[in-house]
Amino acid sequence: GAVNTIKFTKKGKLKGYNTDYYGFMKSLEPLLQPHHKKALILGTGGASKGVAYALKELGILYTFVSREAKEGIIDYDRINATTFDNYQIIINSSPVGTSPNIDAFPFIPYEYFTEKHIAYDLIYNPAETQFLKKAKAKGAQTKNGQDMLIFQAEKAWKIWNK
Image (cartoon, rainbow, N blue to C red; front, side, top):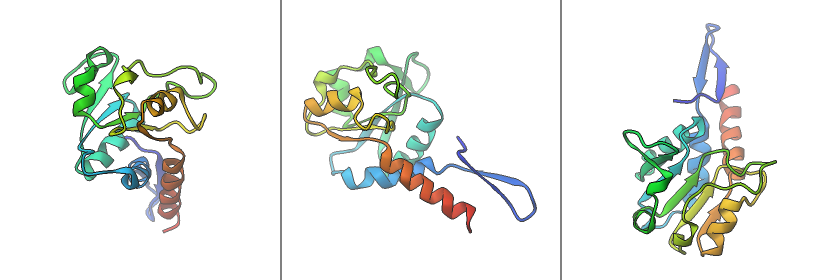
């Protein structure tokens, strides 16, 4: 897993936690509808691990997408209309589109987004990335990572102060 919060124990040891999963889960839950059963996670870095854990906790099946296909990971070239039919939640956990590179976006076929999709970008600066703009233009519900940031920070604060 990926650690983003560290606390000293009473014995002076360091203990690591991941609060990203909590922030992501709390911010995604209000958007979910019964048809949101499967998710694509764009990127395989540290943040993607918390996202995957949250999806598992929510009972949502997921597949990672990366530049290179490996066991359990598909590459971007494999994403097509059928993929979008099968996956109703598309999550950008990569840094692509983060300020100052605000014109960048993950290379996926945005024409297959529909009103049945959720496009979630962990990025919150800019507030609306190109990924979110392109998905919204096709009717998808969109969400940036600002609430995730707030919820995970609240969880970290509770860990530090208990």
